[in-house]
Structure formats: structure tokens, C-alpha cells
Length: 226
Length: 226
Image 1 (cartoon, rainbow over the protein chains, first blue to last red):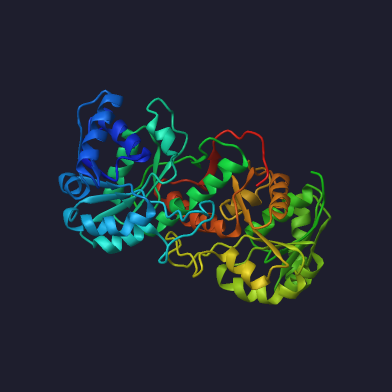
Image 2: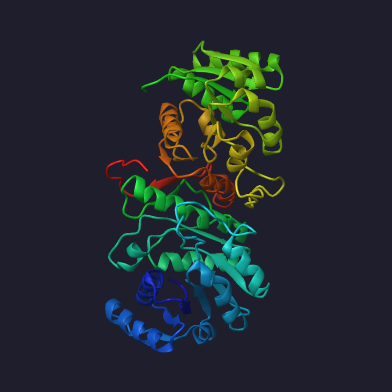
């Protein structure tokens, strides 16, 4: 790891936030858990520190967490996506926002139902404006695997965003959480990872898999920038 | 292989059609190559037979090929998708149609641009009607790898369609062409594979990969039907 960051995880009390927070705290980052309730955020942070054997996880109300973070991660249920973006918009200007949202629409969570416009993360980029660098990642990793710090995660991360440098920060953060990550193109390409989750849930059922994932195949040569 | 089929490949003179035709002919299937020009179809079929050491590949005009096939595969450029479906609609009623179309929109082929409604194959199902069982597959396999009969294909196939039995036929056909395939849910889920191709093209450039692909991870248990 080359850099440590102060990372806010908005909606970070869930399984996905739990795994990311603990893994990143162990890797040396400072973490602020955001929740709609500041007390709940603080309690959760204390528990995460205990689980991970760290002291660098704290908790705040979502907008305060977003303000405190140098990088802001969004892990909220799809129905809270747009209102949460509204609530944090002013706090994240100039920052990298990592959008982890999967547009699942219960009860048909095994059917791809991408939002109008094609992608959650693309909508987030439009809603937050051009001064925010939205990067999408982590939609396909089984939250329970991520939350188990001993679990060797057998799923690659597709990292999408319009700014290659912001993507590279997220590729490094993936590695800090022991995941292999790939630059996968512009923010519109987030549709792939957002859609894929429904098929993985389908396959978990059909093939009795505990957390299906993907690996990218093919042997990379020199990592030219593009 | 349990069953042999008479398979028409509409638009089958391209690289993707070439690989599927030769691999399936070698596996014992009867193949009809379709092209807008019957003479070109026949010439191409002769060449494919020579390449594959087979005699079971013939060629016809697209609509005639579609009529002759018990299973009909569609491998046409995106701009020809809707008109070709119109041309074969009457010929494919009651059959399985395998849609391989990727909605690439040059020049931005590295950017996901899914069609209105979310997916090519879903649109094909709507256009052909409920008596046709549309299944989508093979969008992510590098055509050049497929066309090289000695190439060991390091890419899984996502098989989407509303009818599980039709999907199972396509899973077996994938195996006949030496590819690992997975049931991946309803036809709307084809959006995943249709979108993924743009990211794979992006990665080919960024990482200097000759034909990036995907593998599904996770250990299947018993293959329950769903």
C-alpha cells in the first residue's frame, strides 16, 4: 500500500460496509462509518474495531461522515440511493465517491432491472456533478465473504469511472482489502457489475453455490494507460 | 453429447459463425450457414468443411437457412439485428433461437450502450413472439479464439432465456463446442453478457490482453432446477 486515506462509508453498518471497513482499517486506513443515526454509527464502529482488532474506525451521521471522508463510499439499498446522494452532495464536491449500489428490485432480485439511463453509478455521477469523481466497484462480491476477514475472496472487482486516476485509487483500495481489481472503463460500464449481481444470485440458487463470483481471464501484458 | 441437431447460423459467414459451425460440425451436428447471398453461403460452407474436415456444413440464403434449421443461431452486426429478425420471424416459430448479438455502437465500442428496453435478446424475444424460445449466449467469447479449433477457450458462457429446457439445450451446445456454460436466468439477464463485451474490449486494450474473458467462480453443489 502506498497511501492511506480517510474513508467514509455511508450506509456502512451493513454487511458490505462491515467487510470493507474492517479490511481497510487493518490495512492502515482511517474509517468513518456513516448511518442515518449517529449513535448507531458509533456503536457499530466500536464493534467493528473489536472484530478487526483496530482503533481507527469511528462513526457519524451519514452527511457528517461524508464531510469527514477524503474518499466517500456509498453502500445503501437501491431505494435510498437518490435521496442519500442528495443528502451528501454538498459534502463530497471535489472528492472520489465509490458507488457500490446494486439496483436490485425485490421481489425479482434474480432478474436484471437496470434503472432508466442504464446504471445507478452513471446516475450518481450525473446527480453529483462533474466535480465529483464517481467510481463504481464491489457490487459482485458476496457481502458475507467480505465480512469474514479470513475468507479468501474468489471474485474479481470491476472498477468503472470516467477518471483513470480515481479508478486507480479504487484498484489499490481493492487490493488493500485482498481483492483483485480491474479497470473496466467509463462509468456507464458500471451497468455490467450492477446487472451481474442478479445472475450471480440466480446461479447461487440454481447450482447451490455459496457466493458465486467472477474472474477475468486472459494474460495481461504491460499495463498501458487508457 | 446426447442429441444431434440441425442448426442454422444466420449471418454465419463471420468469425463467430465460423467457429461455432466448425466446432459443432465436428461434434456431429448438421450445420446450415446463412448469408444474405446464397452463393456466398455455399462457398463459405465449403471452406468451413475443408477447414474442419467435415461434410455436414451447407449454405443457404438467411431466411432459407432459418427455415431449414431446427435451432437457429443469430450472429449479425447490431445494426442488422431488427431487420434480420423480421426476415426470419415466420421461419422460426416454434423453434429455439440463439441470439449472439452484442449491441456495440461504433466508434465507442468500449462504452456500454445497451438498447432501449435493456437488451438485444430481450427485444428479439418480443419481436419474435412467445412461440419462439429465445436464448442468448456466446457474446463474450473472442471470435478469433472460437474460430481456432485448437484454441482452448478460457471463457465461460452465460446462457439466458425464459425457458429452462431451451437454456439446457444451449448449455449442451456450448459443451459440444468445448465451452463451459452456465444457466444465468431469464432473457432480461442477457444485458450482462451484452454489456460485458465492451469492458472486455476495454481491458484488452488497457492490459494488452489477447481476448479477455470471464470465469464464474464458486463451487456448485447439486444442479437443482430453477
